[in-house]
Image (cartoon, rainbow, N blue to C red; front, side):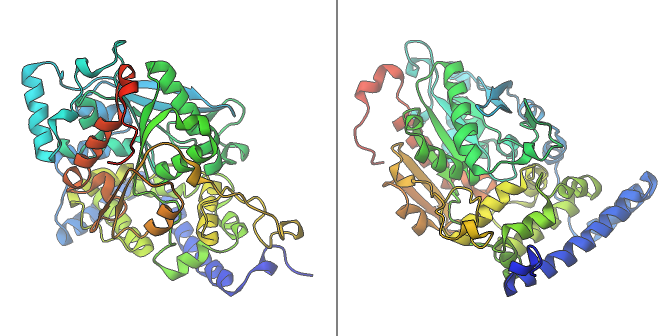
Length: 474
């Protein structure tokens, strides 16, 4: 009689199982020992690690970097940069409670001469045309600003958009100062969306979601709320990584949603990742979903990350993440400054469900941008011969623009473009890796000029709809 789960594993599954068991066992022991130590002992070891680290590496944290690193919320970060924040609540059709944010107005008035000159000088540093600045005369007759929704990637939250230390690289703030009404989405399960009207976060049902739920509920319901609140008829959507993938998914299965998004900007879109750089870990993620569930359970994924973030000396935590990303994805991180990493990496990780990770592993294993497979092959006799629906992305009607990195191991651009209608604009940034599209040192010159030109073209006010260009060519 075969052993459940174990009896269905192949050689690579066994290899992944053994390696993962060893790593998790060692990490678990270390975490338990650390957790049991008294506070004074932790502070002593933290101090000693700081001393040893500073002897080996140069301290790269400036005061702004420390302030952003230590910020506990999106509001704290935005207010540090001088912006007013609104917080809103979205209730999805399946009763999940999402927390989203809004920057309703810029730090500078686009109508004041001095402020406009400052904004123009900042845009000059980015190579952005002054015509991208939206003043009151460019709003609709109802005074409605053009609306932009920014959405984060996998295991992230809205805070990623507030991490950049240089104002010309802070996309959200540039958009706000240019006269756009800027909103920030948060996926269910992260720190701003960990609430449900029926289930509590400690229940398994709360975490029973994948990208299907992002596409079916979170994104459409968030967009509907924003449009109803602002009075705008459509918005521009800018998604990073999974934020782009969930928009491809949502637009492909919801025809009405296409009319509510006037432009979709996909930054480092991951719809068909190649897999991971390390062959052992790659074998693990391509193993049976039961193996992943066996190790991580069926609730939140890698909750121990938050523990180590609190315990480790900050620069050590930054170096640890850098090393991990090199190990997993082959990223060098050379396009980000050490100071930027120190500020950003503390806002890189947030909670998500194990099921949403399994969904990505299924996509990688099947080499298909598909819905979550409830019956993966060989999981049961019923699974043999069943069909798992792929997202019909070729049916999307919304204008799509794509920015991708030539050194991004998570983006297979040839596969992506074959799955889409012809995009209105595609740009490769050859040296860029995945995270460079939000925190790269030259993102303001490599990405922002074309992005703002696209926004200007596709964000005509309601009174000008009849004058819109029929062509989708950039």
